[in-house]
Length: 228
Image 1: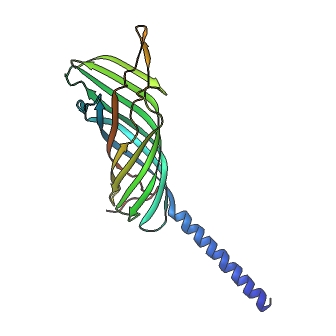
Image 2: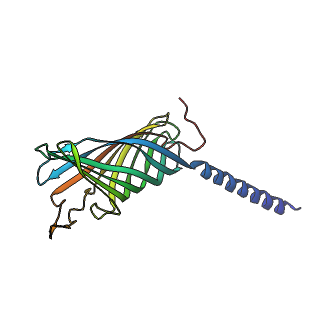
Image 3: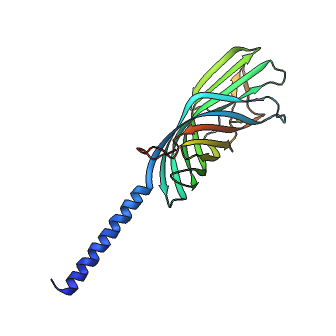
């Protein structure tokens, strides 16, 4: 083998090795994670010009998110994923007689950025678009439930809904997330026929939900435990 061929072969091997190392590094920086969290919600409410009647709601069900991560370095990364969220709020008439509980199950697509230590404590921020698939409404009078309805792909709520989020994940994998829904919860143009006339039950109800969650494992690499 001549000198030129040896140099050419060496160059090709070096290029191949560099490509393999770059590919391995890219694979190492891309990984999946899964999280579970519990959430409480409070509405920013405007009922015909009044902010009275907002009640804190705790959702004692597990919220889930699966995330695809790509870390561009040790202190910056990107993420996108899929989520299932229970979102809603409670409204109580100022006279204290009637109370309404509204909730949806949403399928969401969150995306965002991570800043901090990718294998430790970090801040994250992002945006989510969500599609309500199941809607439930309950009415209580003097503390007793008097009505309940459940609908799939209901026209009573805005679809899709958009939210922005901000949060912090500690180095042991526990995270706190604050999410604010930019979209009004209900479809204020929704109408239904009652007693021979059309009614718009949500025309004067404007509610933007503030969602606060505590969870674990949002950006934890599958198969790798957090250190303490």
